[in-house]
Length: 372
RNA sequence: GUGGGUGUAGCUCAGAGGUUAGAGCACCAGAUUGUGGCUCUGGGGGCCGUGGGUUCAAAUCCCAUCAUCCACC
Figure 1 (tube, rainbow, N blue to C red):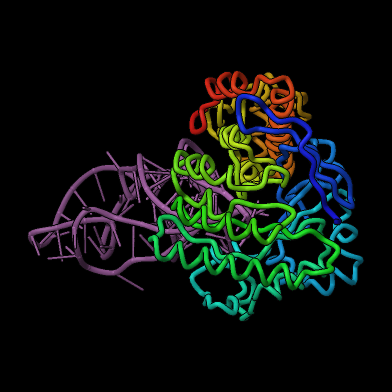
Figure 2 (figure 1 turned 180 degrees about the vertical axis):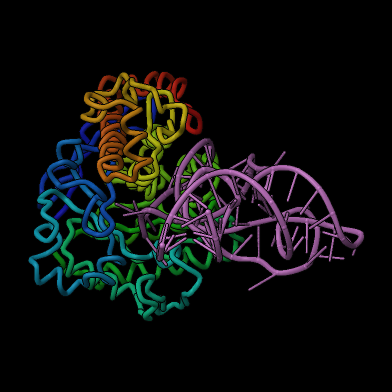
């Protein structure tokens, strides 16, 4: 088994646990946040910087790398790890979500998905088999099954059809990847409908994946709705396998996810909002691009120990962002990644000490998700 | 000094007698959750150089004036 997972500590008060994800490229402590490197790079960051910030595993993207530079080229380069100069673990998304999110110009059938490239408009076809083949060329430690992500809101029948198709595709993904050197994680779908989520989880668990993801969340639904799904869908997954909540999150969602037993997260939010001049602080989000910080010579977050906060002021960062200097978005990206990765370290520590609920209360009482 | 050009948003300009004068950039704010980095959405901004005239109606036509640029003496 190329990837294995071990729960090292189970919290007594919540469903949180500590774990160790073992991969051919090293071990990962869970719960973990995976920085996103869609195009074989965490935007604006170098691999050693991601490592320094505390990143242990990164996510990359099948869809984008297949279109450019092409999975054959990456295999030729010796695989994704060597190509991008990252020797730690890598998880690749299958492309299912991109097909869902990148446009209306797609046609889904049981066979697979016909879609148009966002780069040049050329037509392509992805099936479960194709998605597995491309990911084998890329060579991540963990590949994701090819799924169909239902939108939000979504009618019951539509969510049901997408979920059932995802289940059929999951079986084909497993078959197509038999003997492959990477682990394949299954993805639970079912929209916001409890019985669909239960059905999905039951069917996928029967296939015995080495890990399970909850997909189709963080697609526009209120946070409370997502937490509710986590509450009932989480316990349906085998306790000895890693649970991955795809596309989350914001700091408050990370805390709530761990409380509900999630082991792995990925999200573009920290890096994306950084590039648009917004950062996380202990008190919540801060739009450092705003005029009120033009003469604010204090750090982004006085409690933060990151390189950006130790060396630069809000006024300077605002200047760089306004002037469109690359250093600006690099420094805010450093801060946001550090913030989230450090938060995960603190969460793990709180679980270890059995005080996660207290940590949650303290953190959420100070962190306003939408306000400075 | 003479002739000509140009004066409209912070900047560059569009608008050639007819609704409440527009655009791009800049500025201000919001958005962003399995990434289409430098995007999207919204907002504030104007004595149309100034003064007079013609007209039902003037940024627009006429006169004067000021500023500015160019060419020539």
